[in-house]
Image (cartoon, rainbow, N blue to C red; front, side, top):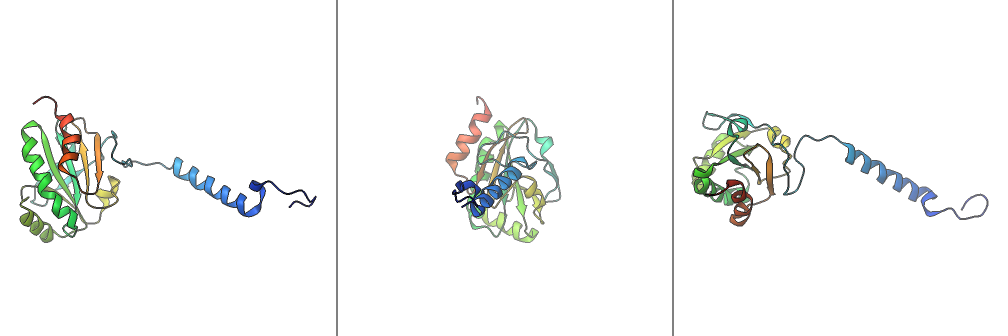
Length: 183
């Protein structure tokens, strides 16, 4: 109540007003914060962040050199059970569509080289191009929140799709084949 005995409107009562002001302030900060990483769910169409460096086998990979190809970027780790399950499916997708310009690259997060080599041997995916991300910085640049996570980068270098969690054959078919054009 006010001093005059007239009840205050609900938004002018101290606890409610403070909570409302806090919610508005947090919402404004979140809405106005800058972001360079893709943040959408499964949709995207943002330019893919840079991804380049030495590979696990001593070669080099640069996503910029893959323009004109459809690139599946799979973020994984040897200690991730679901990652272990999906790697063969992703490798098969690359083999299936490689003649149509599909390429697969793995971004290995917070892992050791020997553990990754053992995982690749176990899953029959030793041909996978792997970029180590020992401190997780590259995956943060991509907006990754957990493993596994897979991105489909189109021929123009834009993120066409994103899957948080395990991919399925159906998801790959739905997301990749439209980018391939006529066989």
